[in-house]
Length: 63
Image (cartoon, rainbow, N blue to C red; front, side):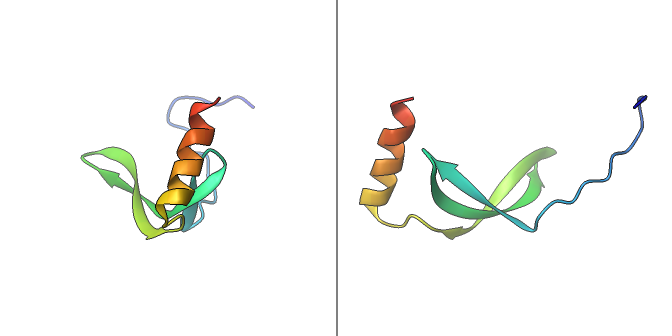
C-alpha cells in the first residue's frame, strides 16, 4: 500500500470495549474524547469487589 498524508483508513470500532487489569476485565467502556484527547468513558464496573480488584492489581505488578 502506498499511503500518503491525509489518506483515511476506515475501521470498525465496537460501541464498547472491556478494560482489563492483569488479564481481568474490570470495566466496560465506550470510546470518546476529553479535552481533544481520545478517552474511555466507564459505563459499567465489572470487577466490583475489592478482592477482585486487588487480585488484578497484584497480577499486573508481577509482570
